[in-house]
Length: 327
Image (cartoon, rainbow, N blue to C red; front, side, top):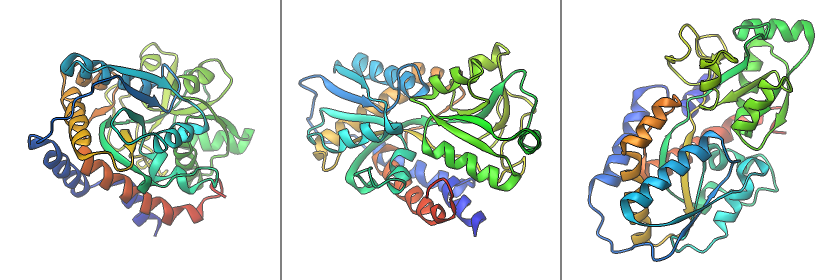
């Protein structure tokens, strides 16, 4: 049963990827019959702290839209409750095209089912596209006394739990799922974003973190090392490091930089925003940045993004009764 659920969440096979790409192409290939243009600055609420991977790739994408369309954006970082505060603010904003948000898939497919304080469901927002897939890795300081998941498990059995700096609940649950398989014990320390999580590890205040891109420069400088990749496949920046599934952990993460808007966004505004996002994501600058941070550039478009959130939501709801951290 767990294997079936993992497959539903991860979509490791090509069928799901192909279906999403087909939806994305359908969403952006046909020129939109709309006349909506931004007549005033568009407010962008980013649900994580400044300097993290979501913030950085988001700011670059919106700068490209400014260059390409002449629109203006006012960007606000609203960290707190691991993105839920920003999501609720977007949900409650006017559905006029002048407030959008940048968060991640987990904020909508997972978080609403973890706390009664989160007053939204995935059906309560509109999804207008993605910038890319976040390629995660479990990392530690270079001198940590473990180099893979098996060694990390042996270390915790002998020395007690490791501290885990976590950007979001989806990362806590990912850590829980591989820990169940391998007997790793850990204590989670929530942070405002991946930049802070990495800094805690670098400063010796946390033992490990799961990072989506921010860790790469520190690996290249020799300050961090990868214990396991948390996405399928391999990574050029970490030759010889296996992903969590190949190490017996049984789980990797499928999470996207996700652009959202208040529910019932007017069709012309939705089409214009989706078209502008797609053009920016296709730009060489966004592609180069995604490659440099070892994330995968990919825009699922409005329909593909919506389908992905809803499918992941169903899969997480099936698995959550098995979780200790979710209770």
